[in-house]
Image (cartoon, rainbow, N blue to C red):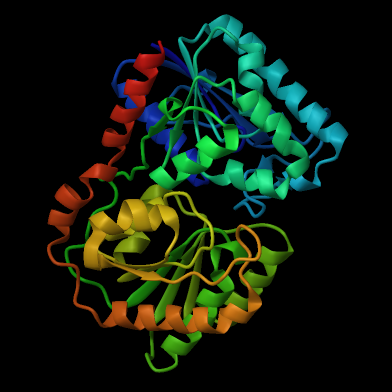
Amino acid sequence: MRVLHALSQRPSLTGSGITLEAMVRHANDAGHEQRVVVGVPIDEPRPEVGGLNRDQVYPLEFGRPPLDFAVPGMSDVMPYPSTRFSALTEDQVTRYRRAWANHLRPILSDFRPDVIHSHHLWLMSAELKDIAPDIPVLTQCHATGIRQMELCPHLADQVREGCSHIDAFAVLHRGHANELERCLAISRDRIHQVGAGYRNDLFFAPAVTPEPALLYVGKYSSAKGVPWLLDAFQRVSAHRPGLKLHVAGGGSGEEADALRVRMDRMAPSVVQHGQLSQPQLAEVARRSTVCVLPSFYEGLPLVLVEALACGCRLVATELPGIAEELAPRLGDALTMVELPRLETVDRPHPDDLPAFVGHLEAAIENALDAPPIDDPARNTSETLSHFTWETVFDRVESVWKSLV
C-alpha cells in the first residue's frame, strides 16, 4: 500500500513521534511505500523518520509567515520550544489550519496514498476528510487531543466536527476508547485498540544488576508530577547516601526552567541527562533499578515497559492506562500510587499533595528494597511480548488493510 503518515509536531521527541518512527520502520520492512509530513522549526534540517530517505519527508516549517510562531505542541510543556494551542489567536488558528491544508494537498495529489495515518485527535487531523474525502483515514489518538479539548474549549467543536468524519481511530487502551466514543459520539466499531510498543532490540536487561538508582523519563512539568518526585527523592536520599535520580527529558517555559534550576541545586544526587535518543535512554535505564512515573495524566506510558525490559522495578500513579493495560501484565514489578484529587485534567488538589508525596516516598522505598526482577529475559520474551512494536504494527496494519 501507499501510506501517508501525518504528525503536526516534531518527530522522534515525544511518545507520538516515537510511535510514528516505529510505524514507518515496520511498514518499510513490510514493503509499503510511504511518505511523512511533520511540523518543524524553520532552522531545523529536514528530519529523517523511520529510516526513510529525507526526500520522502515533507516538513511544514514554523517560524516565518504565515506560521510566525513556534511549532504548537499537543502538551502545554514540550521538550523543545513550542507554542500552546490555548495561546494562539483566532487568526493564528485560521492560518495554522490553512497552512496544513495547503501543505497536504500537493502531497496527496502527487503521492496518491491508499490510506492516511494521522496522529492526534486535533486540528490537523480535523482537516483531512475535507481535503481528502475519498481517501480512508486512520487517526491514532495519544490521549492529548481530548485533554486539549478541555484546555481549549473554543476549539473543541471544530475538532469534533472535523474528526467525526474520520474513518477509523486507533487508541492505546479501553478507557481511552470509552472517552473517544463519548467525545465524538461515534460507534465503537470505528475504534481499534492497538496499544503502544517498545524496541526490544534496544531495551534489554544489563548483565549485572547496577547499584540502586532511580530513573524519571519525561517532560519537566508539574503535570508529570516532577516537583513532588523531587520532594519524595529528597526524603528517600536523606538516609540512602549516594542514591541518584537520573532525569531524562526536558522542557521549555517558566515551569520547566524553575524545575531545571531546582535539579541543578540537587546535583550531584540528581543527574540531568537532557533529551536522549532511544539507544541513549536504554543505556541510562540499564544503570537504574527503579523507574518512577508520578504523572497526573498519561495515555499508555511506554517508558514503564522500556524500563522493565532493562530490569527496573516500576513506581507509577494509578492512571487508567496503567491500571487497565500494564498492571495485569507487569505483576509485582509495578507498584501503583494513588492519585491525588485533580482540580483539572492534570492539576492536583493542593490539600492532597502532602499525602501524595508520602505515598510516593513509601512506594520508592519498597521498590528499592525489593529483590531484582527475576529473570528479566523471561519478562522480555513473555510478559512484554504484547508491547513490542512488531505486535503493535501488526494491529495497525490490519486496520489499514480493512480500510483499503
